[in-house]
Length: 78
Image (cartoon, rainbow, N blue to C red; front, side, top):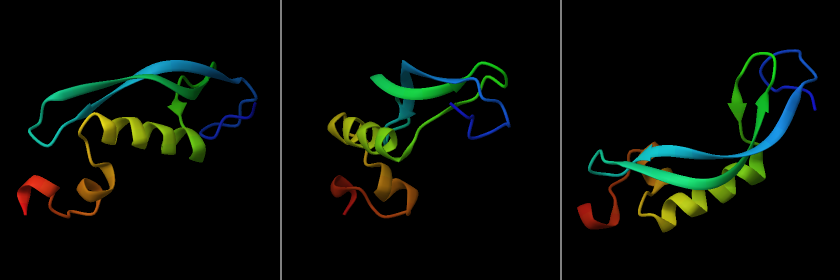
């Protein structure tokens, strides 16, 4: 597959974990996220569906990605 970052054709699908911060700054590891990695540049990236699945898993772990990105208060901060 073509890499989304560099011009390489060596991107492959892998399953990896992603580390995010919870609202208190604590690391939360989200397991089993499918993503692409480029064998040439080393970048890892998600397509739209993979990003949605990661977002759902993160929210299930207590991280509200959209609210944090847009600077909105979290439910317990109202």
